[in-house]
Image (cartoon, rainbow, N blue to C red; front, side, top):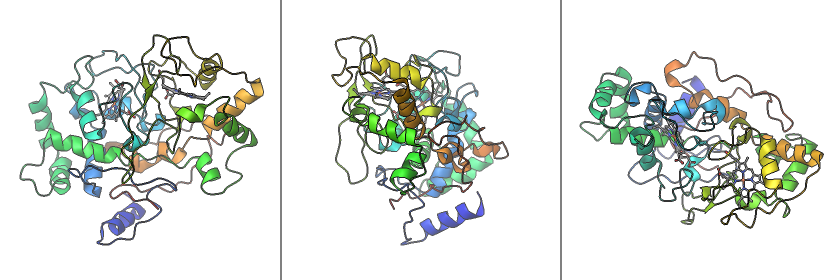
Length: 368
Ligand code: HEC
Ligand code: HEC
């Protein structure tokens, strides 16, 4: 941790600390934190270690980050994920950007609401095997207990417990780290929240108007701060999850995924069927595939080639470079590794130079 980060964390930890706007991006409310798992900087740091630790999988080959890579906004670049034993998952790995605000987690199960309980799934899933931790619990605990970093961090993260190194606590810590994966510092945000008229191109601005227009109706589904389905936050209403069919053949209803950082999360849809944003737009332009469950909001439209470029430029303006490269969200076991390489330059300001200033969101998350 560098000096600046240490300073911020110390400030946040001191009693009655003044909450600072450096912590959450403008406009973002405080995420919900379950009463049984309060956040602390130690717990977030522990969670980050665990998130990037392959020793958590049965055969020691896969960590959460194997399928949720920072440079891809915590996705894996594959149409469908591949588990630690080589099994193909029926669906694509999802971005974890702003997962703390999602009314439900995973593509199609509205009953999964908490990050703590969600983490059990990749660890223990047997159909298909993801991390393959089931039946290897003793081995995994022995590996964690043998690690000096954990012998120090678990007791600091769970101070009241006589034997803090447990898998339940590992999941609690991972969930706390996931709550810091807040993305809201894209060129779009600088344009809208920081009144920087030069943050996005003319083309991206035209694309924004189209995105929110009645004709395209993208914003009717991909809404709110995360450009996703319904959000929940601390003190906010108990919004119900929403699953819809956007014209994907074979029917079924799916969570409305976030479009933040979407330029970095190809391929697209729950089965990775589209390689590019152009193909996604073609899908919506033709009204998707006919199927009985298709939402009435997906009805097709015509766009000129220039307008299509404009919408893509707008989608590219949702890329938060800081989020994709902030070392505070990266692999703590390998801090000397270079950060993920630059993304190809695009219209919407995507590919801009990063500020180099690490954003500190460990510990207590606070609204500005
Ligand atoms: C083998 C690849 C793989 C590994 C390893 C993996 N995930 Fe995932 N993750 C996925 C896939 C695939 C989905 C979508 C699952 C579905 O809908 O059935 C997903 C979905 C999620 C979601 C839901 C996001 C949302 O917005 O709804 C969260 C949270 C998540 N994973 C966290 C984790 C954590 C924490 C770990 C480590 C304990 C982990 N994942 C390990 C592939 C993986
Ligand atoms: C009826 C609600 C709805 C509307 C309207 C809608 N979407 Fe979607 N969108 C979804 C759902 C649901 C998915 C996930 C479907 C799946 O994976 O099978 C999705 C997926 C996507 C994806 C892929 C994201 C990823 O991570 O894989 C992109 C990109 C996207 N939509 C962009 C748009 C754009 C641009 C528009 C407007 C032209 C739009 N959407 C209109 C509901 C909608």
